[in-house]
Image 1: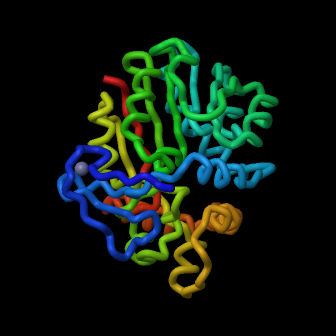
Image 2: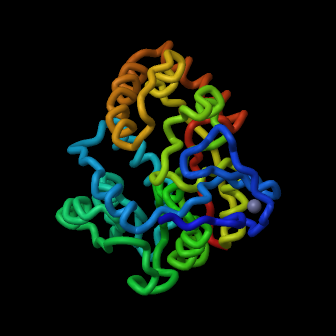
Length: 295
Ligand SMILES: [Zn+2]
């Protein structure tokens, strides 16, 4: 049995329109603030089965490690309590890098198979939903959450929780897919990001900004970047494969092969730079990256 959400998860408006071409999870858009979300709430047992099936990756690429460290460079000036928490930390690849740089690292995860992996890496783990009583209030310099809030039926509450964890002036860094992306426009309802019960909340730069302001944050920067070559290629050549998370996980290495090829080729790198600049200016990249501070 699934429950139904009758009002906007961001602004509480009851004026919702059903997005006809996006049937998975009965996607609706708020007529007032344009938030897009699944109006169905999956049951706990559906979610448990779903997340128990997540696969494991043994390693990440050198490029990803480099990107994580570029991000950590930006976090340095916020270091006061020396504590960082990654909500939905997966196998802890990001926190592993943070730990190497002397941060005290905390993580949360649903998937039981990830908890052990992370604990073995020296990450202080809590299983399941983020529970504020597990931490002293306002005790973190940094909260990160990569590709997590789209999995929640009520992301605004989670953003408020992030705010409670941060010390005044602390930094939040989150990433989430961009519903206004060029990929989504090209791929329509085949956009592989749309997948129920995996993804429940679909943000745009506008709606994430509204959500973060409501949750007590001030904007530092927000950008959209990247386009998945594998996914776009697939959509253009109309490969009919079921959009699900397992498939998405398999695709990732294809993109990292491209990533390596591009890094090693000057012209491809320039071209990629131009495409990214266009995507950034038009706010139509695949992913939203938002950096906000606590008011
Ligand atoms: Zn709304």
